[in-house]
Amino acid sequence: MEKQVINYGELQSPIGAITVFTSSRGVSRIDFGFAENVLPAADTWYKKHLVKADLVFNPEAIEPIVIQLEEYFNKKRNFFDLNLDMSGTVFQKKVWQSLSEIPYGETRSYRDVAVAIAAPKAVRAIGSANNRNPLPIIVPCHRVIGSNGALVGYGGGVDKKEYLLSLEQQHTMHAALP
Image 1 (cartoon, rainbow, N blue to C red):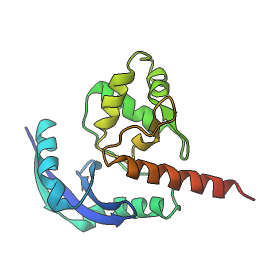
Image 2 (cartoon, one colour):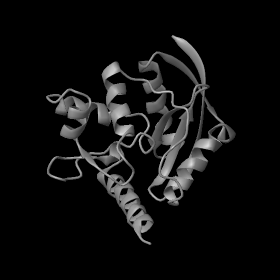
Image 3 (cartoon, rainbow, N blue to C red):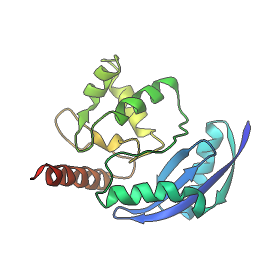
């Protein structure tokens, strides 16, 4: 098992506390909630992904990520320019890459994502990979909705998904005005 220092810190956002984790390779995990509440799950997650994580509170290390997230919430950023250190299966990474290609302010159905990755019958597997996305907001799993337009499932709660979609759609409509 690989030993790594994983720096973490928190930020307050319009959808509540967010804890951000970063390795030497890039941002590796984002959790909704305060660090004290999410550290046990994060430690377990890193072990599952064969990382012996030394979790270190280090707000300076996550500052570039926090700045970009704050810009996003303040409607000053519609894409993220960060190094990512994503842990997952080959299939999950393929799904997450597809999510990253959904334009800001737009949505796709699980079926749309399945077709985009040339796995049209894998709708349930797309949902599972979406649910396991370690970088919500940055890898925009909130932009995936049910084929009937319903805001189905979101790791942080459907209320957060609704807020994020509304934030992006308001910003997109505002940006389109002369």
